[in-house]
Image 1 (tube, rainbow, N blue to C red):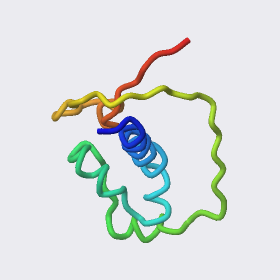
Image 2: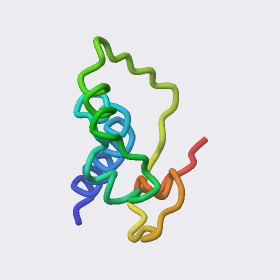
Image 3: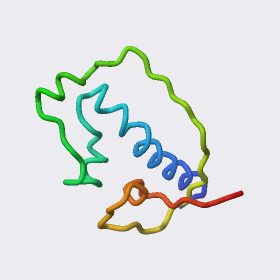
Image 4: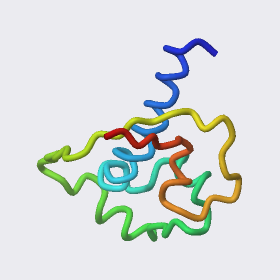
Length: 96
């Protein structure tokens, strides 16, 4: 895969796993399907009533960004993820 396409794929994975995991429940009343597929039964689901209550319940979204990460395509990832970082399907590179 070309470097730029690979970079876009990695960034898309990161965006889906980080931003959408917080915004989708509030905007759509459920977690994103991609997240549900990865996290499976470790992800608490909303009841129909909870989903209706939270869906569209925001008036403002403010995003603070304190840290930048360098990421890489890990090639393969843990098929039985049990951690927050494994769920992202990206590798983190430490740069100082």
